[in-house]
Amino acid sequence: VDMIGNGGGITTPVIRGLATSNMLMLNNGLRLENYQFSSDHPYLVDESGISQVEIIKGPASLLNGANAIGGIINIIDDYTIEPNSVGGEANLSYLGNAKGFSGNLGIHGNHGIISWSLHGASRGFKDFTDGQGQQVVNSRFKGQSIKSFIGFRFDNSLHRLRYEYQGFRPGMVNNASTE
Image 1 (cartoon, rainbow, N blue to C red):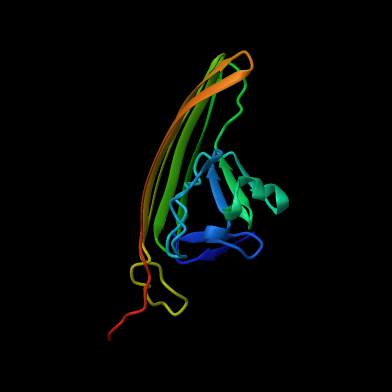
Image 2: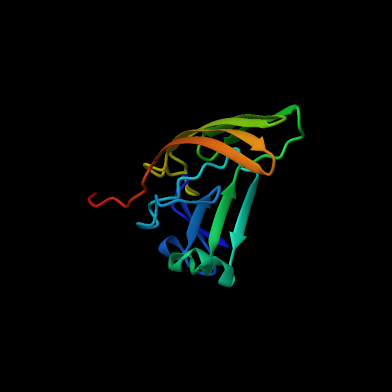
């Protein structure tokens, strides 16, 4: 597994040399169909609140259709937490090269038959500076996200209602067409 990157907010995963329309991206088992145009169009996945990433390669990936020939990436944000307890996490980071902050806050709980989770994240980066000290114009990135779910467990079944919002505004770095 590798990545093709075009700045701070745009990366495309590559599995066994295949990307975009030759691989499948799942979010909690549901297909993400919001990308597949070019390397300038990222998968809209937020890394906050993720508990696990599954990578499926080989013949098992073809069970999901021909567009999964390269493989499958499944992002899972389910938390297993002890009954009758509440947990959470908070992260804040600073990226010096792009003079930006990234932070997220999450809380989740399990109260017998009811489980729930709420995660929020925000990040913003300015145009970064290259190795020669020059500012790379329009390499900025801003994004916010909210993820939540409420679940009910009955006997041997689990029912969940999910909501996810993502608002990303990545900059597009292009060479100048005129001086």
